[in-house]
Length: 251
Ligand SMILES: NC(=O)c1ccc[n+]([C@@H]2O[C@H](COP(=O)([O-])OP(=O)(O)OC[C@H]3O[C@@H](n4cnc5c(N)ncnc54)[C@H](OP(=O)(O)O)[C@@H]3O)[C@@H](O)[C@H]2O)c1
Image (tube, rainbow, N blue to C red; front, side, top):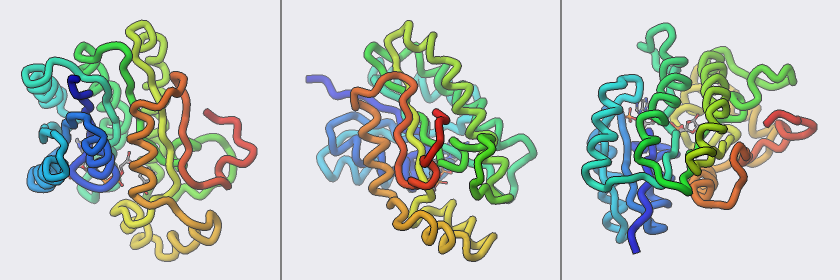
């Protein structure tokens, strides 16, 4: 049997890396995308191989269209096709980020990566967009904590989700589904550590309100599951944060 092939963007650390490990353990060939941390990406590839799986590190800053096209060319040359793409890479809180970077990465690079990868995708295909509750529920007018440091990220990731959802008719015509996985703050991630450092008490306040927060392992398991679970296109998987969900009709 040929292995399923999956591209996971931003898989050199955190949730993307763990998702890649889970998919590798399930028997997929995983393309571990990273922006610049080659050593970390190689380590993820090595861990997948050591566990009996198969993976390749593929470098591309997703905001660089030429780099994305080159990455997709390499994937085509080595494996010919993709069964799934996990759009996990995200950013915008970096201190040196240029104005507009959050939108460039979290919206434009998501659709750009999809456009580049789509010709390699075979039906039935699956695109999984990874987001946060703060982004998914952004602009719904409900009372939520969106922290000033995260505002541009939340806005741009919601814009990215909307742009991807707008592609559903075209994707369906090609036999490709879109599933969104949205998570509460995830324990132990660098983003949450940075938020808590910038605004001390953030994490404790969230824990007090939400109870137990999901771990990286739990969130990554949900993301990996969304790659092949029989969800209808447009479905959203929620991980943690039941207070966000109460009474909300937002998809
Ligand atoms: N952290 C949370 O609490 C939380 C909660 C809910 C949802 N999420 C979502 O889960 C996803 C992963 O979050 P995380 O906390 O694991 O992220 P993270 O630790 O900040 O990792 C980001 C990953 O994205 C890559 N990346 C950043 N900019 C890139 C670019 N321009 N091109 C290509 N790759 C790029 C990084 O690669 P390099 O290492 O090479 O720079 C790294 O592998 C995000 O979509 C996030 O919104 C996170």
